[in-house]
Image: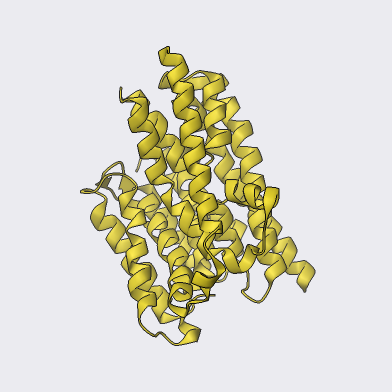
Length: 107
Length: 230
């Protein structure tokens, strides 16, 4: 097979694996979830993964940790959330702070 | 009141779809630069539909890696989506057939976050959050992937518009309501620190996935029910 055809095989394989992973989560038997311990862990898992995602999206650049415009933007977002600002205000303000600082040549 | 919540949910879903979809332009451009053609690039967005996995796939190819390594890396980065299905069980079940197949395809960071950011007692809002965000991001991501693949490097970097910070801020805003109790805040802090500590030393994907260990530790004992995020 040509390299081009192999690339298509890889793309379809990646798609099937991605979907199967997602589908497996939705197929965990109901009886497992009735176990209080599994139920509690499942509730904490989303908080844990999404918090880790925020941290990585804020500080990671490849495999190094950096302090740049994103950190300032997230700090502003956190203050706005604490002040109970609406979702869209938080998101637009974060984008504005990051874009503004970069336009000024920082981060 | 119920109507107000639904409107707010859809507003969140729409903002997240636009901000996330805009990143499709980076993916499309990067994928073509890595040597995939426009059709292959669009197929990745349609079939894999998980940003981290897709960037990893074309990253490996662009760096001269093999197709097998690209598939393995992308599958590994997608593992967290499996956990999301478990966390979403109380919101989405029961589901069967095509509905379940589609729910699986649009189970990503964004749809999970918007669903669980809605009040725990408001099941319709949580469901609407999942479906509106999942389908919204799917449409935007795929349309803008095509645009990025066609325009290639002629377009600017979304980071110039602060969209990387907007995405992180959106996730922060979506996790925020679930941090009402001290235990949830401790889990969030420990997960963040663990992910950052692992970033320089572990392969991509491991830092975020390792946060699941924090969740296991937090849920293993006997926290009082009100300490467990709904």
